[in-house]
Image (tube, rainbow, N blue to C red; front, side, top):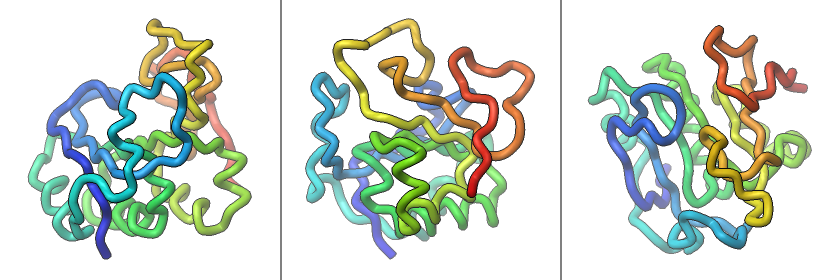
Length: 168
């Protein structure tokens, strides 16, 4: 299975807490005005990589957890679900995922919802330029939620997070 990938950032601290391997995917139809990464909108951008190639890169860095961003990983739901499943089963690393969809939209679509059990944190919702807030951690506007999908957030939780949203 292949995914369209724009870039991979190694040991970044911009996409979630601690060191992370951030996978930036190609393709997004949300087209949020003021998007910080509009070059990611092109579904034909970047290059194709297999789940195995991505997993090798992720495994090579024993210090970093993983983030999915883009673009929007949910436009490549099957591939990112497979990648997330293998990351969790083969490495146990945590996975944060950014999307312009809301959790409720994802839960309403079984194809999209299949990824949720493998993610630890979902940062959901479109960026709203008129609500831009540079003081927020890991998100651009306050409508975007940082949702811990499994269990309570850690003791040193991030301001603005949602403590727990049970999966249906």
